[in-house]
Image (cartoon, rainbow, N blue to C red; front, top):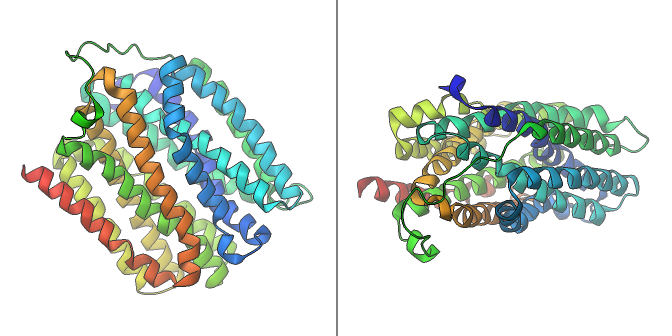
Amino acid sequence: MFTSLPKNVWLLAISQALIMSVNSMVVFAGGLVGTNLAPAEKLSTLPVAATVVGTAASAVPVTMLMKRIGRKKSFQIILAFSVLVSLLASFAIHNSSFYLFTFSTFLFGITAACVMQFRFAAMESVSEELIPNAASTVLLGGIAAAFIGPEVAVFGKDLLATEFVGSFVLLSVLFALGFIVLTGFKNANVQVDEAGGEPRDLKVISKQAAFWVAILGGAIGYAVMSFIMTATPVSMHVIDGHSLTDTKWVIQSHIVAMFLPSLVTAWLIKKMGIANMMLTGLAAFLACIAIAYSGHMLGNYWVALILLGIGWNFLFIGGTALLPAIYRPAERFKVQAVNEFVVFGTQALAALSAGWVVFSVGWELLLLTTIPVIAVQAILIIRWRLH
């Protein structure tokens, strides 16, 4: 089935590998730069959280930009802008400006919101039966990004006089390469009238049970993942004293685990159904919490973060694959905008609170606070499946 995917999907997957490196770099290097520059330790994860806040704030404008001028032009404009933002981040680190660095990572949220539209662009480029394959293939680019981001951060750390300045200069090169790759992308020709009927009001669309399963699947999946992942480098390296190398390995393993299951999730959807796959993702979250709660050894962090990545993948791809079933082609930008805002708004709240929570109440209580939201999503999925 993957061999039948069009050129658009593969170009998006390659670009995803290059551009999504910003996420893994900010998670890995952003917290460390923040720890060095922040005026108070509880603000150390603010640069990481700022990217998530920026993603939430720009999700709707980015989606509307694509509706207005098309996906390809939007992708290229945002990537050119991202090159400049990378250089701004380098300048901020060079001048030891915590708040300017945080502002630059906030602007990276626009980049992230752009990348998250890749999956929709891929799904629009294929027939209905290939939608799960297209979404999974694009997300596979995240596997390469898991390694590229942290490796570029480490390679560039001492490249220039000030630590990590070179890392963000190299990030600008990755954005430029992504821009070049996407010159071959072609906007899909979506027939907006083929579903029959006028576009419905959002209030009508949201009455479908599947609407909330899809959107909250992505939102809760991202919130739990971001909450735990954002706190991990601080808990591992700053509080528990694990080495920078070990911390990098855990974060890289986690991001690989987020995207590697994409090789089989399309097949799992056919075999298990979306509901069962998403419930399996929630079970992976609970296993992650249990293992992370049981100890602070390297092995606990490593296994827990792998399970965290798998849980996110099952929930996010499940919600993404379900979403087109609840809207008509003419409604796609409206529903996608709402989906992105809810998903990344929730993730922003989680990321913003992670640093404060881990320093205030500790790693164990941080883990336990995620259980109620996991239970909420489980109830929604079970009710939807039963009815």
